[in-house]
Length: 201
Image (tube, helix red, strand yellow):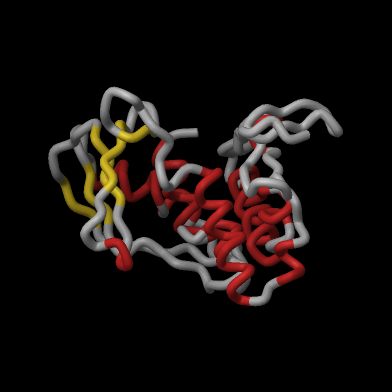
């Protein structure tokens, strides 16, 4: 899917994603800055207005959030930071999703690291029902309200003639949390052949 498709989805279901929707209400973009090939009309249509033409497209569960747009130069680098880590900025190669440098290490915002942080949050919050879910996919699917809003978004795409949302292959979605060493399994085989980074089955 294109970047504008993903931004359109964020403007409907929120930026927080399925995991954080267990703890937060939907979070929406406040503004967006574009690189080259900027067209205000094309951009607004791509990231929000193509689904806004039908007032009945969404119910109260699912809303469409507009925001201001601006134009700027573009770079391959991607930078992420968080409020608790104000002095720790991670620079990524946006074309690879890896930390910028010779080793191309895994990013702290990778699915594996984010799932580990999610489980840590569940533990601190006493959410034992979420800790009992062994896989990244199961934790996401258990966010019922988010999944319902996402399905409504997919239905709206189809109803407007934009086709079906293309997802990743199943083997890239199903990742399990190792109970022995707190690592995610990166190699996927049909159960019970699941292995974590340290070789635990």
